[in-house]
Length: 269
Image 1: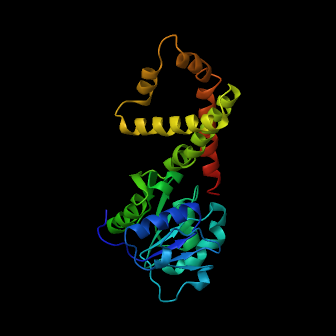
Image 2 (image 1 turned 120 degrees about the horizontal axis):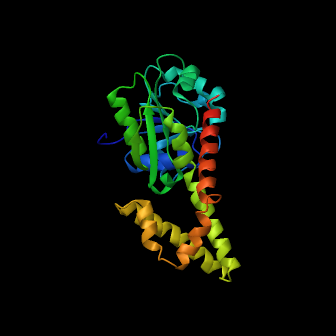
Image 3 (image 1 turned 135 degrees about the horizontal axis):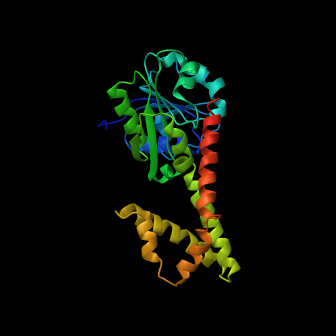
């Protein structure tokens, strides 16, 4: 990764994810940059980022090292062409779900250096995971810059096969929502079994965050950790007999990931 302060950047879209990225970059000594968003979610200390509402308001002399697209994929066809003027000078880093390298290049024009990436929402606390894929013509220096930008909010992995990003989106990009759903369901079930609501919430949240931290810190396979908690004939075994029934979690999770992967492919169109 790069060392020293980050070069000037152009952030297109400063919502939840864009704001998290901007906050992390500012922590690393970001040079004066520009964010484009009519209603930005600015992080603390965003004075080094000039915020404008529209691409037309970007200062004419501004020359970013990277243009980062953090907008909804449905906006791509109308928004991206406004940034074609940076094709010769900048690398384009897209975190839009589904939008392919080829589709982004079609909107920007030939010769654009593009890196496509999929981060997830734990980026807000610098605990995200991002998978990235570099398009043709992206130099090592530009790839290194993009890795530095993404690593500011967590861990980064690279793939050469762009089609894998659809499954990455389904598992990792959308994955936090599945965990939040589990927290909801655990809390609700605890209340159904007589626990006070505040205690049920505490138990659900701390159990998930603690188990996640243990999984992250452990070198053991997730199945081995599950087995270690499951005493023969005990309460965990009884619960898992319900959850691991072939019609329950094994089938439901597979269907869910397949559905999300397919939706990611559809967004490319």
